[in-house]
Length: 192
Image (cartoon, rainbow, N blue to C red):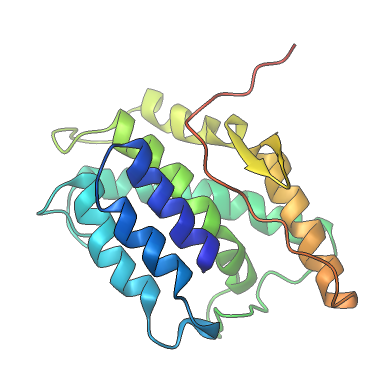
């Protein structure tokens, strides 16, 4: 939860929104299991700051479709990596819905979501009618954008794999550290 709020704050900072300071402060005061619901309080500040005062996640705004599409791509990549590394995606830590086959993937996606948010905020507008094939391709290609993790820069799909391995290791070794991504400015991976 802390990293998600830090990445949301970084997203607002990269978009030059002053509300980033509020989110950085909120990230520093998150309690275990988010008992005081900082995630929801942050979302109430974050999404209107990022997409405009009238924006809400439940609205018919086409940017919501873009966000959902991008999140679904990351969720699928995370679920595949969890299985590859011997974890069961339906058994979550914080997400525990019996009808959700991707509870653990939904736990792990949280700090990655602001990458999608930043991409949508810079490439979509509320006047877009529907997701075009080009827009969908751009969202799909987010897995080839870069994040920082454990002091190095990795493609998002590589960072997802590293986070999955770290999560699996933390289950068998309580001293193992979870490697979560830090949001950086949007940058597509370039092969050298």
